[in-house]
Image (cartoon, rainbow, N blue to C red; front, top):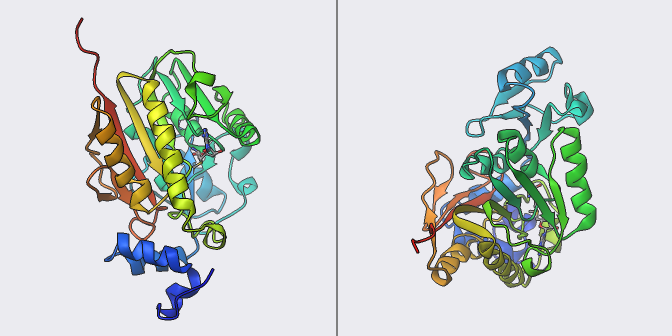
Length: 309
Ligand SMILES: C[S@@+](CC[C@H](N)C(=O)[O-])C[C@H]1O[C@@H](n2cnc3c(N)ncnc32)[C@H](O)[C@@H]1O
Protein backbone atom coordinates (compact mmCIF):
# COMPACT_ATOMS: atom_id res chain seq x y z
CA UNK A 1 0.00 0.00 0.00
CA UNK A 2 1.42 3.40 -1.00
CA UNK A 3 2.47 5.58 1.91
CA UNK A 4 2.44 9.35 1.96
CA UNK A 5 5.96 10.82 1.90
CA UNK A 6 5.10 13.62 4.31
CA UNK A 7 3.94 11.45 7.22
CA UNK A 8 6.10 11.15 10.36
CA UNK A 9 8.49 8.29 9.66
CA UNK A 10 7.58 6.03 12.60
CA UNK A 11 3.80 6.21 12.14
CA UNK A 12 4.02 6.10 8.37
CA UNK A 13 6.20 3.03 8.38
CA UNK A 14 3.70 1.13 10.48
CA UNK A 15 0.31 2.19 9.12
CA UNK A 16 -1.00 2.38 5.56
CA UNK A 17 -1.75 5.96 4.53
CA UNK A 18 -5.55 5.61 4.50
CA UNK A 19 -5.55 4.22 8.04
CA UNK A 20 -3.11 6.82 9.30
CA UNK A 21 -5.42 9.51 7.95
CA UNK A 22 -8.59 7.87 9.26
CA UNK A 23 -7.23 7.50 12.80
CA UNK A 24 -5.79 11.04 12.77
CA UNK A 25 -9.14 12.43 11.61
CA UNK A 26 -11.15 10.47 14.17
CA UNK A 27 -8.79 10.97 17.14
CA UNK A 28 -6.71 14.11 16.51
CA UNK A 29 -5.54 14.37 20.11
CA UNK A 30 -4.92 10.68 20.76
CA UNK A 31 -3.65 9.59 17.32
CA UNK A 32 0.07 9.59 18.11
CA UNK A 33 -0.46 7.59 21.28
CA UNK A 34 -2.66 5.16 19.31
CA UNK A 35 0.04 4.67 16.66
CA UNK A 36 2.61 4.10 19.35
CA UNK A 37 0.39 1.62 21.19
CA UNK A 38 -0.22 -0.23 17.91
CA UNK A 39 3.52 -0.85 17.67
CA UNK A 40 3.94 -2.30 21.15
CA UNK A 41 3.65 -5.93 22.22
CA UNK A 42 0.14 -6.61 23.54
CA UNK A 43 -0.26 -7.86 27.10
CA UNK A 44 -1.55 -11.39 27.67
CA UNK A 45 -4.69 -11.26 29.78
CA UNK A 46 -6.68 -14.05 31.36
CA UNK A 47 -10.30 -14.37 32.40
CA UNK A 48 -10.67 -16.53 35.50
CA UNK A 49 -13.64 -18.89 35.28
CA UNK A 50 -15.70 -17.72 38.24
CA UNK A 51 -17.53 -21.05 38.32
CA UNK A 52 -14.23 -22.62 39.39
CA UNK A 53 -12.10 -20.05 41.22
CA UNK A 54 -12.09 -16.55 42.63
CA UNK A 55 -9.63 -14.22 40.93
CA UNK A 56 -7.45 -14.07 44.04
CA UNK A 57 -7.37 -17.85 44.37
CA UNK A 58 -6.20 -18.20 40.77
CA UNK A 59 -3.66 -15.41 41.21
CA UNK A 60 -2.20 -17.44 44.07
CA UNK A 61 -2.01 -20.52 41.79
CA UNK A 62 -0.13 -18.46 39.21
CA UNK A 63 2.23 -17.20 41.84
CA UNK A 64 2.88 -20.78 43.03
CA UNK A 65 3.70 -21.64 39.40
CA UNK A 66 6.14 -18.71 39.25
CA UNK A 67 3.96 -16.78 36.80
CA UNK A 68 3.83 -13.09 37.62
CA UNK A 69 0.45 -11.38 37.14
CA UNK A 70 -1.61 -8.43 38.36
CA UNK A 71 -5.34 -7.86 38.51
CA UNK A 72 -7.01 -5.94 35.66
CA UNK A 73 -8.47 -2.62 36.70
CA UNK A 74 -11.92 -2.87 35.09
CA UNK A 75 -12.67 -6.50 34.26
CA UNK A 76 -13.60 -8.17 37.56
CA UNK A 77 -12.23 -11.59 36.59
CA UNK A 78 -9.29 -10.28 34.55
CA UNK A 79 -5.59 -10.90 35.21
CA UNK A 80 -2.68 -9.48 33.25
CA UNK A 81 0.50 -11.51 32.95
CA UNK A 82 3.83 -9.67 33.20
CA UNK A 83 5.02 -11.65 30.21
CA UNK A 84 3.14 -13.97 27.85
CA UNK A 85 3.39 -17.74 28.25
CA UNK A 86 2.01 -20.83 26.57
CA UNK A 87 -1.44 -21.93 27.84
CA UNK A 88 0.01 -25.31 28.90
CA UNK A 89 1.96 -23.43 31.59
CA UNK A 90 -1.25 -22.01 33.10
CA UNK A 91 -2.50 -23.97 36.13
CA UNK A 92 -5.63 -26.03 35.32
CA UNK A 93 -6.02 -24.45 31.88
CA UNK A 94 -7.25 -27.71 30.33
CA UNK A 95 -9.69 -28.16 33.20
CA UNK A 96 -11.27 -24.83 32.26
CA UNK A 97 -9.97 -22.67 35.12
CA UNK A 98 -9.06 -19.79 32.88
CA UNK A 99 -9.27 -18.41 29.32
CA UNK A 100 -7.02 -16.09 27.37
CA UNK A 101 -9.00 -12.90 26.67
CA UNK A 102 -8.08 -9.22 26.58
CA UNK A 103 -9.54 -6.99 29.28
CA UNK A 104 -11.54 -4.96 26.72
CA UNK A 105 -13.30 -8.08 25.44
CA UNK A 106 -14.20 -9.08 29.01
CA UNK A 107 -16.15 -5.88 29.57
CA UNK A 108 -19.20 -6.96 27.56
CA UNK A 109 -20.77 -9.19 30.20
CA UNK A 110 -21.68 -6.51 32.73
CA UNK A 111 -23.29 -4.40 30.02
CA UNK A 112 -25.65 -7.26 29.17
CA UNK A 113 -27.20 -7.24 32.69
CA UNK A 114 -27.56 -11.01 32.63
CA UNK A 115 -30.18 -12.69 34.85
CA UNK A 116 -31.18 -16.33 35.45
CA UNK A 117 -33.79 -17.62 33.02
CA UNK A 118 -32.94 -15.29 30.15
CA UNK A 119 -32.69 -16.43 26.54
CA UNK A 120 -29.49 -14.96 25.13
CA UNK A 121 -28.09 -14.81 21.59
CA UNK A 122 -24.39 -14.37 20.84
CA UNK A 123 -24.91 -13.33 17.24
CA UNK A 124 -21.31 -13.46 15.95
CA UNK A 125 -19.95 -15.93 18.44
CA UNK A 126 -16.77 -17.49 17.06
CA UNK A 127 -14.27 -18.35 18.41
CA UNK A 128 -16.37 -18.08 21.56
CA UNK A 129 -14.47 -15.83 23.94
CA UNK A 130 -17.54 -13.83 24.84
CA UNK A 131 -19.87 -16.86 24.85
CA UNK A 132 -17.66 -18.33 27.57
CA UNK A 133 -17.66 -15.09 29.53
CA UNK A 134 -21.47 -14.90 29.33
CA UNK A 135 -22.02 -18.45 30.59
CA UNK A 136 -19.45 -18.15 33.37
CA UNK A 137 -21.11 -14.94 34.56
CA UNK A 138 -24.66 -16.31 34.46
CA UNK A 139 -24.78 -20.11 34.26
CA UNK A 140 -28.54 -20.24 34.94
CA UNK A 141 -29.63 -18.79 31.59
CA UNK A 142 -32.56 -20.51 29.96
CA UNK A 143 -30.37 -20.84 26.87
CA UNK A 144 -27.38 -19.32 25.10
CA UNK A 145 -27.55 -19.56 21.32
CA UNK A 146 -24.04 -19.22 19.86
CA UNK A 147 -24.46 -18.31 16.21
CA UNK A 148 -21.85 -17.77 13.52
CA UNK A 149 -21.89 -17.82 9.74
CA UNK A 150 -18.66 -19.82 9.62
CA UNK A 151 -19.12 -23.48 10.47
CA UNK A 152 -15.40 -24.14 11.07
CA UNK A 153 -15.12 -21.21 13.42
CA UNK A 154 -18.29 -22.26 15.27
CA UNK A 155 -16.60 -25.60 16.00
CA UNK A 156 -13.96 -23.62 17.88
CA UNK A 157 -16.74 -22.17 20.06
CA UNK A 158 -17.85 -25.71 20.89
CA UNK A 159 -14.26 -26.74 21.71
CA UNK A 160 -13.75 -23.71 23.93
CA UNK A 161 -17.03 -24.17 25.81
CA UNK A 162 -16.36 -27.88 26.24
CA UNK A 163 -13.04 -27.09 27.91
CA UNK A 164 -14.91 -24.71 30.24
CA UNK A 165 -17.63 -27.34 30.86
CA UNK A 166 -20.31 -24.96 29.59
CA UNK A 167 -23.21 -25.64 27.23
CA UNK A 168 -24.82 -23.66 24.40
CA UNK A 169 -27.03 -24.25 21.41
CA UNK A 170 -24.91 -23.90 18.26
CA UNK A 171 -26.34 -22.38 15.10
CA UNK A 172 -24.51 -21.98 11.79
CA UNK A 173 -26.39 -19.15 10.08
CA UNK A 174 -26.32 -15.66 8.64
CA UNK A 175 -27.34 -13.30 11.45
CA UNK A 176 -28.56 -10.84 8.81
CA UNK A 177 -31.18 -13.36 7.60
CA UNK A 178 -33.21 -14.50 10.65
CA UNK A 179 -36.01 -15.87 8.46
CA UNK A 180 -33.68 -18.72 7.56
CA UNK A 181 -33.05 -19.85 11.15
CA UNK A 182 -35.02 -17.99 13.81
CA UNK A 183 -37.94 -19.77 15.55
CA UNK A 184 -39.65 -16.41 16.40
CA UNK A 185 -38.95 -16.82 20.10
CA UNK A 186 -37.57 -13.43 21.12
CA UNK A 187 -34.23 -13.09 22.89
CA UNK A 188 -33.98 -11.13 26.16
CA UNK A 189 -30.36 -10.25 25.45
CA UNK A 190 -28.34 -10.11 22.25
CA UNK A 191 -24.60 -9.60 21.97
CA UNK A 192 -23.63 -8.40 18.52
CA UNK A 193 -19.83 -8.52 18.41
CA UNK A 194 -19.87 -7.44 14.81
CA UNK A 195 -17.44 -8.28 12.01
CA UNK A 196 -15.29 -5.14 11.75
CA UNK A 197 -12.05 -3.62 10.53
CA UNK A 198 -10.19 -4.86 13.65
CA UNK A 199 -8.37 -1.51 13.71
CA UNK A 200 -8.44 -1.63 17.53
CA UNK A 201 -6.30 -4.77 17.66
CA UNK A 202 -3.50 -3.97 15.22
CA UNK A 203 -0.88 -4.71 17.87
CA UNK A 204 -2.21 -8.29 18.05
CA UNK A 205 -2.69 -8.73 14.30
CA UNK A 206 0.00 -6.70 12.53
CA UNK A 207 -0.93 -8.17 9.14
CA UNK A 208 -4.26 -6.31 9.23
CA UNK A 209 -2.24 -3.25 8.21
CA UNK A 210 -1.20 -5.04 5.03
CA UNK A 211 -4.49 -6.69 4.10
CA UNK A 212 -7.13 -4.16 5.14
CA UNK A 213 -8.11 -1.69 2.40
CA UNK A 214 -9.93 1.65 2.71
CA UNK A 215 -12.63 0.19 0.46
CA UNK A 216 -13.36 -2.54 3.07
CA UNK A 217 -14.79 0.00 5.49
CA UNK A 218 -18.03 0.93 3.65
CA UNK A 219 -18.63 -2.79 2.99
CA UNK A 220 -18.21 -3.61 6.68
CA UNK A 221 -20.44 -0.69 7.69
CA UNK A 222 -23.17 -1.98 5.39
CA UNK A 223 -22.84 -5.56 6.72
CA UNK A 224 -22.97 -4.32 10.34
CA UNK A 225 -26.07 -2.28 9.49
CA UNK A 226 -27.85 -5.30 7.97
CA UNK A 227 -27.00 -7.52 10.95
CA UNK A 228 -28.03 -4.83 13.45
CA UNK A 229 -31.43 -4.29 11.80
CA UNK A 230 -32.06 -8.03 11.60
CA UNK A 231 -31.03 -8.64 15.21
CA UNK A 232 -33.32 -5.87 16.43
CA UNK A 233 -36.34 -7.87 15.17
CA UNK A 234 -35.24 -10.82 17.30
CA UNK A 235 -34.98 -8.83 20.53
CA UNK A 236 -37.84 -8.95 23.07
CA UNK A 237 -39.55 -5.69 24.10
CA UNK A 238 -37.59 -4.34 27.08
CA UNK A 239 -34.57 -6.38 25.97
CA UNK A 240 -30.96 -5.22 25.64
CA UNK A 241 -28.70 -5.51 22.61
CA UNK A 242 -25.02 -4.82 23.20
CA UNK A 243 -23.19 -3.80 20.03
CA UNK A 244 -19.43 -4.25 20.11
CA UNK A 245 -16.55 -3.90 17.69
CA UNK A 246 -12.77 -4.04 17.99
CA UNK A 247 -12.59 -1.00 15.71
CA UNK A 248 -11.46 2.56 16.41
CA UNK A 249 -13.26 4.00 13.35
CA UNK A 250 -16.39 6.07 14.12
CA UNK A 251 -18.18 4.86 10.95
CA UNK A 252 -18.34 1.36 12.46
CA UNK A 253 -19.06 2.61 15.96
CA UNK A 254 -20.83 5.74 17.18
CA UNK A 255 -21.90 6.75 13.66
CA UNK A 256 -23.27 3.27 12.98
CA UNK A 257 -25.32 3.41 16.18
CA UNK A 258 -26.47 7.02 15.67
CA UNK A 259 -27.77 5.98 12.22
CA UNK A 260 -29.45 2.92 13.74
CA UNK A 261 -31.26 5.10 16.29
CA UNK A 262 -32.54 7.31 13.46
CA UNK A 263 -34.12 4.26 11.80
CA UNK A 264 -35.65 2.72 14.95
CA UNK A 265 -38.16 4.66 17.07
CA UNK A 266 -38.33 1.80 19.58
CA UNK A 267 -34.61 1.96 20.40
CA UNK A 268 -32.62 4.08 22.78
CA UNK A 269 -28.96 4.02 23.67
CA UNK A 270 -28.42 3.64 27.43
CA UNK A 271 -25.58 5.57 29.05
CA UNK A 272 -22.84 3.20 30.17
CA UNK A 273 -22.20 3.61 33.87
CA UNK A 274 -18.57 2.52 33.72
CA UNK A 275 -15.17 3.96 34.59
CA UNK A 276 -13.38 2.94 31.37
CA UNK A 277 -13.23 4.35 27.88
CA UNK A 278 -14.12 7.63 26.23
CA UNK A 279 -17.72 8.78 26.26
CA UNK A 280 -19.05 9.25 22.72
CA UNK A 281 -22.26 10.76 21.39
CA UNK A 282 -23.54 7.21 21.67
CA UNK A 283 -21.59 4.39 23.30
CA UNK A 284 -18.04 4.31 24.66
CA UNK A 285 -14.70 3.85 22.98
CA UNK A 286 -11.59 2.20 24.35
CA UNK A 287 -8.40 3.11 22.51
CA UNK A 288 -5.37 0.81 22.69
CA UNK A 289 -3.50 3.78 24.14
CA UNK A 290 -5.83 4.36 27.09
CA UNK A 291 -6.21 1.64 29.65
CA UNK A 292 -3.72 -0.76 28.11
CA UNK A 293 -6.64 -2.83 26.84
CA UNK A 294 -7.42 -3.43 23.16
CA UNK A 295 -9.29 -0.81 21.14
CA UNK A 296 -12.99 -1.58 21.49
CA UNK A 297 -16.36 0.12 21.13
CA UNK A 298 -19.50 -0.72 23.11
CA UNK A 299 -23.05 0.58 22.85
CA UNK A 300 -26.03 -0.67 24.84
CA UNK A 301 -29.34 -0.47 22.98
CA UNK A 302 -32.59 -0.91 24.88
CA UNK A 303 -35.83 -1.84 23.13
CA UNK A 304 -38.98 -0.05 24.28
CA UNK A 305 -41.22 -2.21 26.48
CA UNK A 306 -44.45 -3.41 24.86
CA UNK A 307 -47.27 -0.87 25.28
CA UNK A 308 -50.65 -1.89 26.75
CA UNK A 309 -53.45 -3.39 24.61
C1 LIG B 1 -15.33 -10.21 15.94
S1 LIG B 1 -15.60 -11.87 15.51
C2 LIG B 1 -16.46 -12.46 16.92
C3 LIG B 1 -15.58 -12.76 18.12
C4 LIG B 1 -16.34 -13.50 19.23
N1 LIG B 1 -17.53 -12.77 19.64
C5 LIG B 1 -15.49 -13.76 20.47
O1 LIG B 1 -15.57 -13.02 21.44
O2 LIG B 1 -14.74 -14.75 20.46
C6 LIG B 1 -16.88 -11.74 14.30
C7 LIG B 1 -17.51 -13.04 13.88
O3 LIG B 1 -18.63 -12.71 13.04
C8 LIG B 1 -18.83 -13.77 12.14
N2 LIG B 1 -19.73 -13.27 11.07
C9 LIG B 1 -19.43 -12.48 10.03
N3 LIG B 1 -20.54 -12.23 9.31
C10 LIG B 1 -21.57 -12.86 9.93
C11 LIG B 1 -22.97 -12.98 9.66
N4 LIG B 1 -23.53 -12.39 8.60
N5 LIG B 1 -23.72 -13.72 10.51
C12 LIG B 1 -23.16 -14.33 11.58
N6 LIG B 1 -21.84 -14.26 11.87
C13 LIG B 1 -21.05 -13.53 11.05
C14 LIG B 1 -17.42 -14.15 11.71
O4 LIG B 1 -17.39 -15.48 11.22
C15 LIG B 1 -16.65 -13.97 13.03
O5 LIG B 1 -16.53 -15.22 13.69
